[in-house]
Length: 313
Image: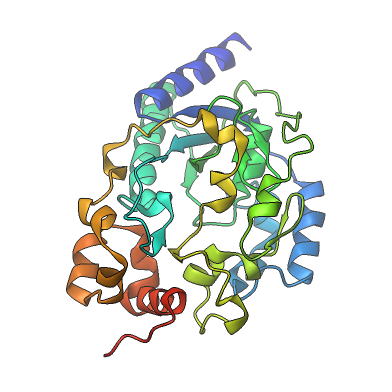
């Protein structure tokens, strides 16, 4: 027991030296409650065109099927909050996409963490995940004691709000486990439900993904339905509204990760400049950004939709 406690403490200490803001550990288990909830959500079509959400259902609710011999889920949080704002009136980009694509940043940090574990404690098999595989990251973070699921379905921490990336390193050794975070501190607050421009938060803790602005501007490959034409609140990539109004985010502090610093041109571009965005400028500003996911034509589609104008080709 003492050895597990010591190993777990050293893993957490090293995670903090890598720049992670929080680290918690939970035992691998079948997520029965979440399985029922996910199945219902999928059956109701709330995933829209995200058909990949239907794949590998058994792995999503049981990481033991995802990583052979898995015993522990090490959950990690990395702050991305940037209080800097774009020019007033410009089409908006979610804070998380201001800097370098978080997938690259976090995967490198997790690789260093896994290397440290193997070098320090022997042959430890495992895999790291950053929302690119069938892992219910918010559930595991809550089970690892890092926070609770807010009514907007994002993880919230009492100390620093919700502007965090989540990641997991699933390993095949037993560790000292943290207590699950069981208290919901949202209380009677409904600010996120009331503020959602497209009414995507259909009830507390349930988001209809097919209505979410993040889905419409990133995941949806078809044209954005006309019914949303006056509801996008000028968002051209992602949306931060439910987090901006959350009272717990008054405790948020700016990130400490240099790679997440914003490209200066992104903040200074006016609405007219965005509407005239060239492929060359797109490639320069978003060279290593998560915005690359939409590709140039996808972002142009979004800008045209929120501005009500068609860009001349």
